[in-house]
Image (cartoon, rainbow, N blue to C red; front, side, top):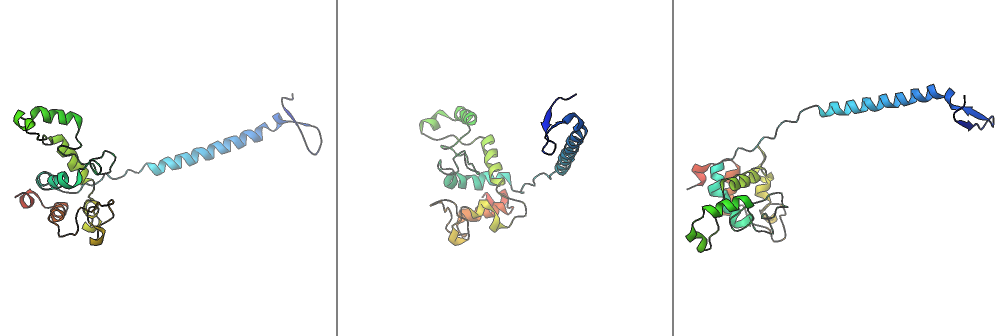
Length: 195
């Protein structure tokens, strides 16, 4: 029975491909087996678990009283880290806020404060967000010179990394705010930083 016939170059006639089917089927099975073996090998490579990220040991209360005020003053401008597209996003009163948290803060704010034009303080949720953002920029055991939270705002001339055009926050590492950030990054707590 001839289902499909192809002319052969040598004989000039037709060839019954049903006679070739066992060879064709073996090749398909061989390709399928090779593909499955490669797929299983790839999955086996993914089976190893990655260790969970180790977070830097930094003091949450010291962040709130010493680091957050620096963020408010120096980092939270809408064109900078008050922008949701940045790696480090900073929430601050009168700047970028979480809408639901801002509503809560406004509801808790006194009428006199609102009338005076004061912006409500950050909520605990917003402070937690800022703390997590800052902590994500610090790797445990990382050298101070390699810490993005410290070297990005430091002027290039002082050993920092390029931050942005006109984005040098600290002219040198002797700046009081830089020293506060460095102390917090290296593990100083509320007792030393919040006086």
